[in-house]
Image (cartoon, rainbow, N blue to C red; front, side, top):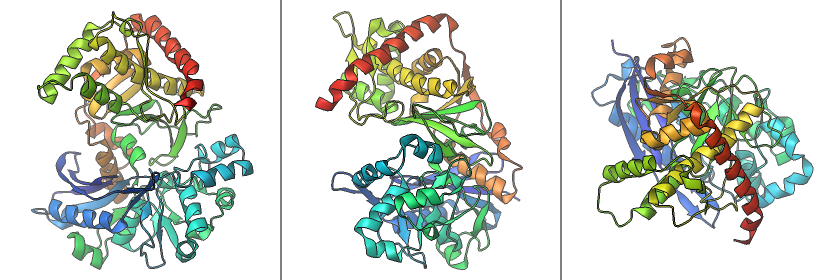
Length: 499
């Protein structure tokens, strides 16, 4: 009998549904899109029933030609840091306030006098920010008191779908840690944090482990999705922790780096990373007993995409031919791009600078520089920004020797070498670059449903096609690049407030 695992990745633009077999092979996948409502400058909302419709439609489509009795388990990855208010019957009381929404900024500014920045960071693993769910629910309490009064539970995206499938309102630590209402050391809801935000603890859903069942598919959900009534539904996790699982970062010493439009680097750790400079932040991992220290940059792959579109906008070549030319020109430029430095802060920066006013910049541009030097400087600028994050990890005791690289930028061989040499780590590139999040959710379904013993099964599924060692002879050159990268940012930082 065939054994399948169904994974859903509830993103910002749509739900990606993927069907895997028990050997980790992707059988088929599809994406159902849904809209995003952006308004008032800083508001970003979505209709939760659009999520549910996308899950129902994509599940039915993937089950065509598949015996639903062969689905061993269903699990989820989902966008984090949201706030969906539902009543006691699970009905949404308003659209979900999603991760990108910053309407609670003024409220958060008022909270700073009630708790020290480091005290909050040590409790939550994060800086105090309007990005997180606690601030968004507090905004609802202050501005929509009737909605707050009727709210039985506040849920993240995948938690709402868990409810729709099983009838149970639950969450797990990875999504819980994105609310900033969870104590990152105990992985339990914190009365101190709830009191800070003025939130009733009874509005927080029950916490289970990521590998625990949320329940089983109800008769009603079965009729809408095509799944068999009684199919196990496993809690799953947030999209970042899911990607960590799918990229192999399930034990200490292995980091994962996603080089997408925005980019991040994270690693599995037994303890939260307490960085005195608060350069990094920490989510709960989906692997029991671990957390996930993380640094996220606003523009990684996005910075290179911008550079290529700008410098090649008059070219009639197809995309692959343009990027072949990019690689040739970057490889023709020397390490350090003839002294040219690029700061990839095109829309401000999160980690490591935490400066929403930061700007992108080329420093040291002369008549000697050509397009290849500029492109190399962009790739090196992203790598050097990652190095600042890695240094914060290392300064706090992390031992990171290898990084599993994912995302669209991982296809670029010139960039892979720059990352290895600049960061001083082995860059390991899997054969599949875009499926890590779905793979993480599928493995979680398998562990939770008893198909797999534990998360070490990723070693069987994750096939590394390239392992690139850093060139130690370039260490001194990249150390000098790092010094100049940081030094020039510090000189420019006071100017950003005027632009």
